[in-house]
Length: 313
Image 1 (cartoon, rainbow, N blue to C red):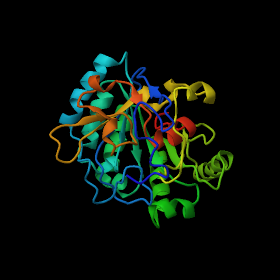
Image 2 (image 1 turned 135 degrees about the horizontal axis):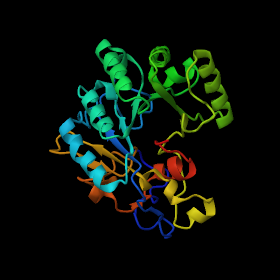
Image 3 (image 1 turned 60 degrees about the vertical axis):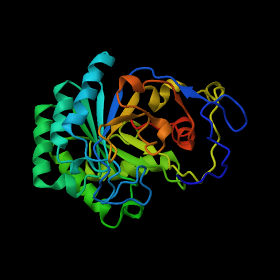
Image 4 (image 1 turned 180 degrees about the vertical axis):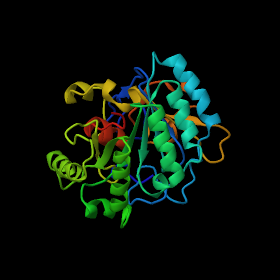
């Protein structure tokens, strides 16, 4: 992990550097269960949240056998269908992606798949599988495409030359085939949200995508996460001071299943973003992972509490 500007911060899960009681988030109700399908990706971004790349294998491909027990637990924990979400890496590189998708959809859950909409998606076999699932489970599957900026220059600076054109082509193909889409973008420090939404809105209109840029559930703008930028620790008093509810935090309603390289079985993480910090690995089963989560990481402060971001709609 990158060294913090203030190394005294985020050391103790119970108290802050100033000795104040650290904020915790109590699990409320399961709304989204994330599955990391594997850390391999067809590209390597400049600032990947989870260090995915064409050689990154810290998370191995998730198998149907890995996934099945967690879906059984969902049936026990949740009061009805929830959102099942796949992230990576690039999910469409997992050879079992369509069986994994079927397993979620067959149980009545909605399915969200994060993708860069590039070459892995555009292979004929994968295109055929996407069309098939969308026809068999109408209205139940959404693809969230990572489009870091509304300009080719901004997006390609993060993902490499040609990635914007490839992603736009993938989104056009998905639109032509009636697949529901939304966009995950990155809020750039030099722009405000209104500028970003207007820029994406112009791109969406030009391409004819069925996405509302003003809807934060259809265009999700994530703040940057840089551990070299100093952020305040969140105390238990901050909820009232900031007028933010702990129930709005991702870890009150979601968990992520991963399988680490060399591990005999999958495990559960409290957060989709804090994948390399052992204090956020909450157990091997979903049932045992629902203890309160101490906000003992700078990303908890910047991304969730202060940034107001969520990986779920």
